[in-house]
Image (tube, rainbow, N blue to C red; front, side, top):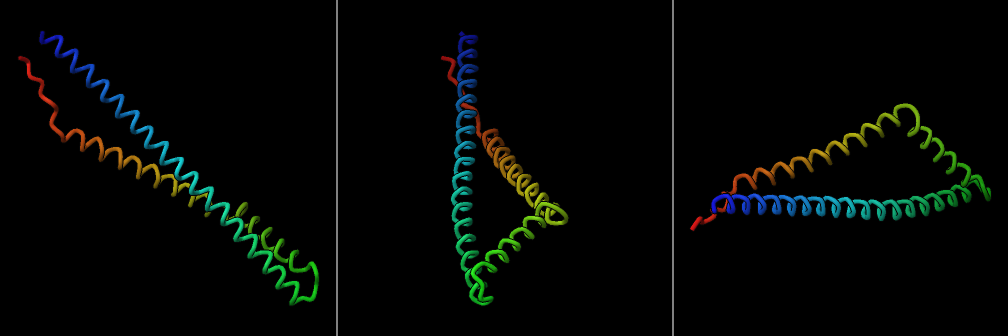
Length: 132
């Protein structure tokens, strides 16, 4: 009788832990998907904004320089300089440090959230099963 209750409680515990694991995975996946969608939208809109501003500045430079193409070459050269600075030298180190810091902060936030949830679960009293 007691052994049956014990087995039942253990099975119930295992089922509860599995359900909790599924919910945590679902939450993690949904958070990652939301971040991916948000990042994609920001990237597309940011690219469009940079493109339009660049064309506008190139046209303005064309007008000032009285040339049909010089502004486009100037803007292209500017972007090549920026790309070169990001790929080599201090720009590359700065970019790497910022990405590494962002990834570490995301993992720390997730770890802190997980430990707070497990501490909260441990503080709750377990359900007492009546043996009669």
